Image (cartoon, rainbow, N blue to C red; front, side, top):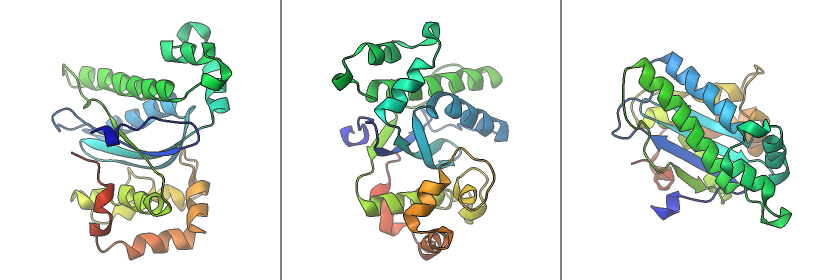
Length: 221
């Protein structure tokens, strides 16, 4: 399990995954998905760049790059002092060469899960923990991991039999990569990684036959 609990360091990329406690539905309708993405934007966007995502029935996948420690410190400083969390205050109080993003990032993900769960439980008259603990995160280090992970997250609906044509799935980031519409996804970074939109599409088309080549990327349980 420890290999799925990577520390979240500044300037590094990660695959982040979580599901519900007993694999019940995490999203029952599109309003739930919109709420989750709104809460994600509130708690995480000041601290990470979102590269790829996919929301499924009982779980989600994100590929993110943690921002620089300078950007993270600035984001914390922009919080009203009375609203700062304990991890945020500790970050600001630490010596410059001892400041780490991990505790703040871990706390922000926990705040996201807690906030969403409270709204979800109230809406559906539900009680108890919603999310599995701890949430999984794996550092993306190798170039082929980076490329295949982008495909894997986009194609996750196909793997779970939800929608075979993942390119038209409403709740992943594939379509956002190919449009000019406003998005919280950093499409420029992803498209540049593949060398342009045509290469991005071609890579997804080549791998559209099977997911067996990237079984090693699976961190779901």
